[in-house]
Length: 389
Image 1: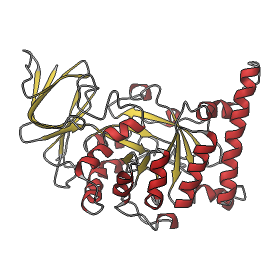
Image 2 (image 1 turned 90 degrees about the horizontal axis):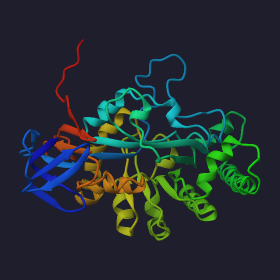
Image 3 (image 1 turned 135 degrees about the vertical axis):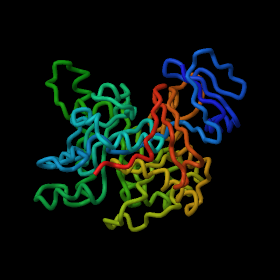
Image 4 (image 1 turned 135 degrees about the horizontal axis):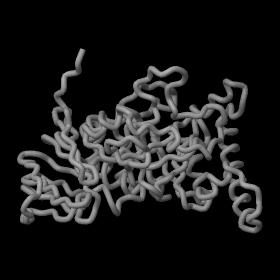
C-alpha cells in the first residue's frame, strides 16, 4: 500500500484538493481527499509543496518502434513499412521494443501511458495500441488488451510512392485507394458472413473491425483539404474516426465539432519540413476547443515525448488555451479518445494508480517530475544524474 500525502491534487474531474492524500492499493486508487486515514504499515511519499496530477497520456507517439539509439545496421526504425501503401495487417506489437530508452524519458516527464502507432508513410499503415510506460522486458507487460486502432494517412507523406514509380502519386489516387480498400473490406465482411468458408484475406480481416465501427480509424491529416477528405471518408463509411495532427483544423473548427470527430493536435516542436505545415500555429487547440471539439495534445515522437509538457506551456501562453483545458488535453481527453477514461485520465477512486508528482506547474520548463506511479508502482525519477564519460 502507498500513500501520497500533503500534495496539491489536480483531480481533473473533481477540482483541486489542497494538502490532499491519495491511497493506493493493488494498483488502484482506493481513497482521495483531505481526511484520508492512512493504514498502519503503508509506505508514504510526502508531496508537500508539490503538484500531483493524473499521469500524462501521449495520445499519438512512436516510442518503442523508432529503433533508438539509431545505430543498428539497416533501417533503424520500425515505424513505416514503405513497400506497399496498403498494409492494414501489420501490428506494432510485432515491432515493439519494451526496453526502448524513450519510455524512461517519458516517465521522467510524467507520462504513464501512450498510444503507439505506425507512421504515416502508408495510406493504411497498420494497427497500433495503447501501452503503459512501465519498466518491462516484453510487449505483453505493457500493452493494454483491447486497445487496437488502425492508422490511416492522407497528404504529402503517402505520395512518396509516386517517387518510386508506384501509385499513389496524387492526393486523388490516395483517396481512391483508401476508398477501394474500405469498400473491399465491407464486401469481404458480407461475403464471410454469408459463407464462413470464404478464404481468409489477412488485409481484409484487419479492416473488417474498422468498417464495422469496432476499431477506431486514426487519420493523419495536416492540410485543410486532407482533413476534409478524412471527414468525408468517416461519413461515407461510418467510421469511428479520429483526426491526427489536424494542423489546419482551425479553418473548419465548427464543421469538425458539428460532426463530433475528436482531434489529436501536434506535434509542436518540429521544423516546418513540408509545405502542409506552413499554417501550423499555437492557437489551433484553443480555437477547436472553443468550437466544441474534443481535443488532445501530442508530441508525435520517440524520446521527444518528454518535451511535450514544455510545448503545452507555449500553447497556453501563446495560443490562448486555458491551463485547465491544457491539462485535460494530456489526461482525460486523451483517455476518452483512447476509450480508457474509465480507468485513467483523472484522479478518482477505482481508477488505475497512474500518477505524476511535480515540483510545480508541469507546463513550466523549470518544473521537474520527481515521481511517477504506474499501476501503483513508484518510480523515483533521476532528473539530476550526470552521464558517465
